[in-house]
Length: 308
Length: 234
Image: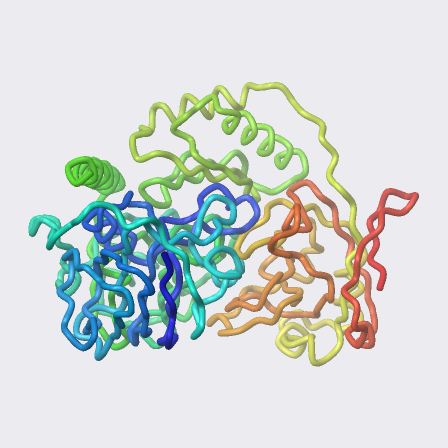
């Protein structure tokens, strides 16, 4: 089973749920920017949640299917179409040999996920197929996909007909709600700065991090602290007062104050922001955030079991 | 002291000031915690004054505190790290922040680079980017705060200073450190074993080299000499 990239698009990469265990070498786990959408697309497609799929950014690729497949598109609405006919999101769709998948104008969100039956089957590196761009690991030679790439997939499983994701599980990508954060270890002044204004996502937004822009103030100090660990979702505030949110291919450590951390459940929605989008933050306690995370994991496990 | 960074990442602080003795304690504590004794602890790495753990969402604070106390009481170890000499060119165009540093420190470039090369540094942790060594033991008289706004692009091999830390960028990336020079030595090679050159516990001395070393086609490779120091050759 093979799919073929006919046109590359803006940034299309092979992603799964990442490569934990290498942070001691300075290599972050990486994986899908919106792991929830990838996992839900996989589950709907009859795959294991952690199977590899394609992460498609803003302007999508053109993909030819050489054999019959089932596919599910999740995450952003990037106007996917099969031989010109609209493909609904979160719905299993049968693709015949020779059909062409294209994308058009972005309608909602920034990153779509393509799950294919049997999953993408490139050679894993360090236990994962996720493309980590600056570590040059995973995917095809650690790089983004380009025209001419032929990618092996697993065997198409049983018929999925038009299986849909349960409406209760649909992620709300476009909600304007504040992003919930837990306070970081160097919260104080930097946390105040996060909570007292709204921010705009700048164009400096890639798989490594998102830079935000606010109009209130600089920090009164900073720049000399010892570097410390940071996670996917950690918000660093440099002295210029413009926060940086670390994303999937983030650094593993950093030296600007860690003002807060976007809770796991809100990270998918954050990853779907488009430059120019406005956002605000609100704070939870660490315990509230950890309880949300536990509940979320249980829900996803339960859903995966239900669909299996 | 235990502080959550995210729902599943935790700073465990074991001391206030970085020192070789504290580093040894950190490494020992980390290996104890990671030896399969605590299945809810998924991953660990050392930092300057403690360690960072990645834990399962089900791991509670009490369990964590108990594990750390048990690890701190464990026996000492005495693994010696490797010793390295790393060639660095401190000349333009690699000394990008020379003016900023000279005016901040009120010191000549000759004096600054002399102080940067006159001692051995301990690798306290690898972090930030694949293979980025965080070094300790720098002369405090050449400490300079990070840039107020990080640069969009720092080049591969750039040597930098951030506060009292010094380190080397293994790949091009955004970064907020003051850039003082560049090394031609590859610090990270995906697919090689090990893929990163340095490990926590290694010792590094920088040696000044001329810009012409960058004209060499060949990638420098190291050889351990009779004094136990690994030096690079072209």
